[in-house]
Image (cartoon, rainbow, N blue to C red; front, side):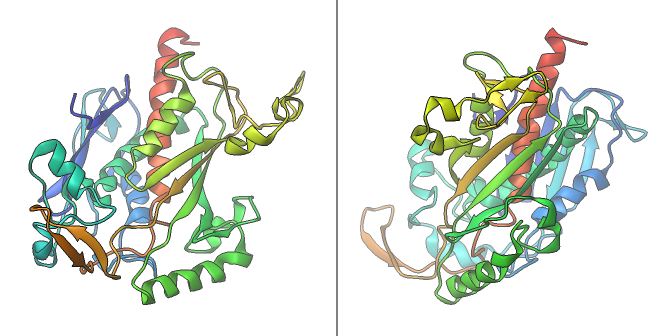
Length: 352
């Protein structure tokens, strides 16, 4: 197993590197007769695209998707769907000085230890650029979920330690940070500006909510849906932690508080975040993903080269100040992919 494929029934394989000719995704297991066009996929890719705000790199990729297979007369055929996104605005010269250096916080050292070779240009396969392929595949998964009335949305819960206290996602379209608390947006923007001026970066927390998910999705032991959702989100390079529902706060609760009581109308509370015993409850699924600061910073850092000699480096090139908000559609994509897979698995055992 190469580790480039996720899913059991709805299977997604991504490929490509940051400075390669292109990157993309291959989807197998998508049901036939689903209306799908490049514009459906493009809508999600546009939200992830570079160079749209103060937190973004100056690299400007159009991220135009091409559907190469699996579609006939505007509908899926049930055969593999190939999605292609070409790289155009690559500038590898800025990375030449890093050919023999291990950048702190990046996958340079670990990739070389695993494979004995690495692509130093923008991080190669370990680059955040790889997530464009995930977003493209997630857009296809979203179409499957929409047929069942399942909606997935993500927003900025926290950025640089600044918390959004208002948790209703309703106003997120009103600001480019997709933050539900308009009172903290300006503070977040100022924090980003300061980090950029200081040659530094910021982390944050993304909250993902799933509406309309039916009860019964997920497997009871090793393929619990919360385990698979966590795996999908943790496979995003920037994500260092995932919690569902009350998450770590549950450890501080009494059982009498943490338990979600049931009535004939449904659950009274939702501390479980829509998942109990690895299976969805029919309540809203609530997930949070903690994203680390981007490791490419302008400040001097101590490291070593591939000969083990000490070196001090300052990262040049075109880099984001934070993965937020561009990581939001990436998180949505991974949740869509996992849910679509489990939805199709459930239909295999309970078609009605």
